[in-house]
Amino acid sequence: MKLAVICANGKTGRLITNKAVSRGLDVTAVVRGENKTDAENALSKDLFELTRDDLSGYDAVVDAFGAWTPETLPQHGTSLSHLCDILSGTDTKLYVVGGAGSLYVNAEHTACVSDGENFPDAFKPLASAMAKALGALRERHDVKWTYVSPAADFRADGEETGSYILGGEELTLSSKGESVISYADYASAMIHIVEHGENSAEYVGKRISVVEA
Image 1 (tube, one colour):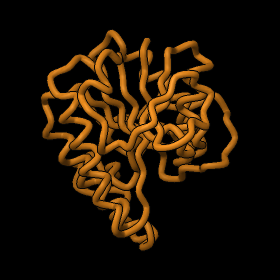
Image 2 (cartoon, helix red, strand yellow):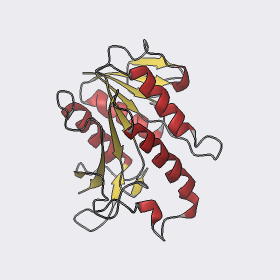
Image 3 (cartoon, one colour):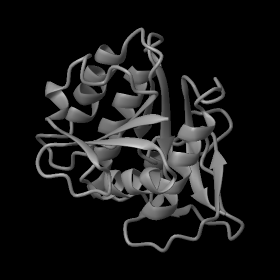
């Protein structure tokens, strides 16, 4: 499998890239500067400058873009729109590192994690920006996309347990009744999803989620 990981130098992107390399995939790290991953192949280019030719021939692309400041939050939507435009009509699958705030907490899908009274105010702008980007992605029927939300407690320095559950649109809890996942386990799950989805339509056009087992 030929895979490109965009924003591969980021915390999540680097773990995903390195995990893909360890699994024997043909990986290209798309970075803005020096390649800091285990991938031998690298493309030094800004996400917004990527062209259709840059991503031609890949079986899958993982979008690990992240923005955190108020002025850059809208880029969650604009970056995803740009990637969809250059992948439009191709067979390349797009896997998006998503957010947990938009996961539903009821069967009617009328309430989300970010609507909860205990959801931190500091994270609400980010959750809103990512939810808006997901909403726009749902309208794209010209791209084979899959949006992968982590658990509510997404731990950058958490240990890799090697055990996780794949869920759907609703918040899924672990056997301990928790919604937790480490970046390392998320990376493993993402590569599993990418590999499993190579010849399957199971995940196309859907949002799924990952939580520690």
